Image (cartoon, rainbow, N blue to C red; front, top):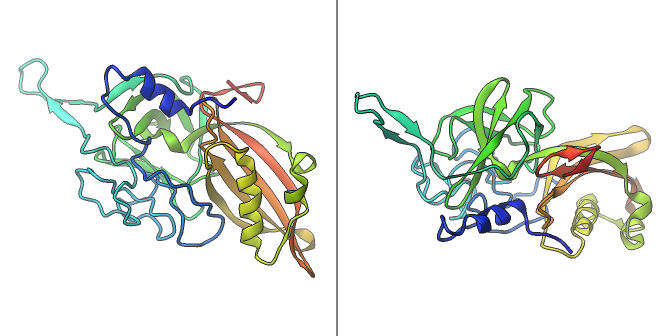
Amino acid sequence: MRRRPIWIAVAAAMAMVLASCGTDDGGNGEATAVVGGDASDTTLADGGADDGAGSADDGSGDGGDGDDDGAADGDGDAGDTGGDDGDGSGAADDDGDGDTTTELPGTPFDIGPPAGEPLDVVGVRFDDSLNFREGPGVNFPIVDDVPSLAATPEIVSAGEGRLLDQSAWWRVTVGGADAWASFRFLGVLGNTESLLADLDPAIASLETADVQDLITAVAESRGGGGPEPRITQVQEPAGLAGGQTSYVVDVLDLGDDALAGERLSITVEEGPGGFTLVGLERTFICNRGVSDGLCL
């Protein structure tokens, strides 16, 4: 039996504090499978390098409903990215001496990767990046932006988060600088293993005229009958020897509070009748950390 995503578990635990919660980034809840350059990705991230300037394909720039910075909505969805209903930083003079200190918005939570755990950007398209900010919310200045599969800078958990009205944020260090990023687009990578022998025979033997149809079918099959997964191609297709091509796709929101999802390495080959699957590996993407390569 699948457990609720960690975001929902955190929201339930804080029900006495928060009257209501939306999705963790204020999105519209869609999870359209996107494995190519189609302008159909509804993955909703604080992912554009500039506010409101996310790629046309995924609308992942800042600009959710209620953002105080007036950024444009990347794909026109009213509930896009980080729609925290105006949550922002507030300055308060704590000691009456005229100095102000920035109060962080939201409610603290610590159900996530422990301090010191290395993190990776997950679920952000290959042509976009995840924003890291000075505080938890899209109103804070950007410290850095990092794409999926980036070797540098190093991202390390600081072990604490903030729950806003419609988004969850996690504190990290990125390249040694203190920062915050959308909790939904961070994960801890675990073991990698081959899946081809255990794949549904109907998927393993599938042949399609369009390679994108094959990649989508493989990714969707990992949902296991649970909630519709969030599927995002995180690396450009790579040509391999023998005319084969490799794709890397993150499959997230699997309805488990420990397992955030899977990073799939999918290898396809084109033959006379179309494209077929010749290789499939998955890497665990974990919410709370790993032990011996498995999600905690």
